Length: 184
Image 1: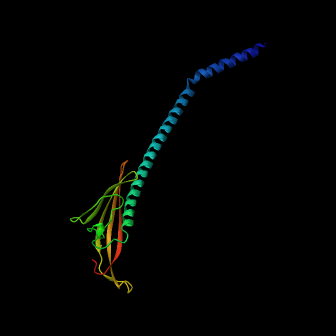
Image 2: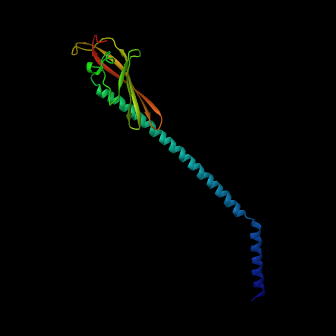
Image 3: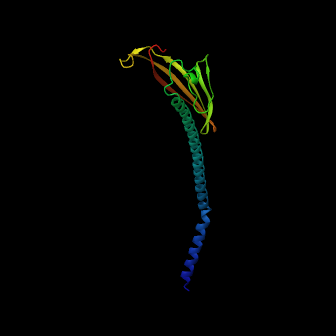
């Protein structure tokens, strides 16, 4: 073996040991910093996704409550189609008054002039209904086919739906109907 080559090998080994000794764990520290940054990024992403899930759940509940309130109003209008007239709210259903939708019990308050349907069970909650006659318009001449003069009666149909998981939504629907002149 050549003594110069052996010396060179020993020199290289010694240089390599010196270089390793000088690092003092710099790679380890850089690796730990990178790991910490990645961990914080993942935790932040998890928190964001949890918030988005809560928002999505709240939106779904609000949409269900809105659907239930609209369903109650639509059922009431369908059941009472053609029955809306001036001062018909205090009448019984047999005498031409309002018919409660579904299986709801109803009542009329003469002091508040509001017809109320007690809350009934609907999809994922309850929905109640209130109907109030707002006004009856002055007679207007519209032509000769309906006798020439008619009036309009306006109603406010309001439904409030409350979900079993929380939240409440109120929907107002206006109803206008034509009545013969002198009905108001």
